Image 1 (cartoon, each protein chain N blue to C red):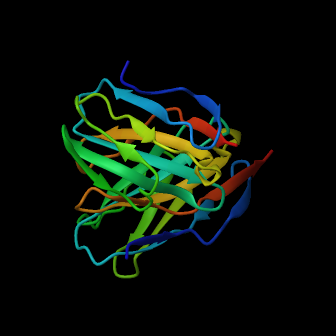
Image 2: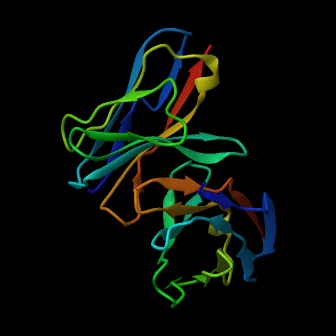
Length: 113
Length: 111
């Protein structure tokens, strides 16, 4: 069975500091996609970053970067220079070749001024 | 503006009264999907569709129906809603293998 696990229900970070959110997954597929989504209080789901499993290079999007460890099935999100607007729920997700998607339970990120 | 729309945004209904939540996208995406979000469980996939007249079950399909008669629309049907279907529902669309674009969500309460 395919699963996505986020073991940190809630985290806090000081404004301007760096924080890393953890995500592990389990799949028997060789080709899949990984995503991080942000959900602010408005409930809108916003894509943060995307990674194809066949790419070794870690994806980067401005202040957001991932550490993709395929052998360990780990996909952590690093947020640099944290801003108040980064406060939200963050969901890790995996899409497989059958176009099914699996989401983790989420990590609530608090940003302290 | 590229978007996924859902209606209604909020719905309170009673057990057993059939309801439909509509979903429409204007991006010509082949892939559409429905999710429910419950506290502590993240998002769970209900049904998905890879094209017109092609639908398949996700992880939690029981109690739900879908149809895909047109590429842009993917309604979610609850024939006989029950209180355990109280949840936040999201519709999403995408090109295959790419990130999904989500609708604004529908908050459903079944009493």
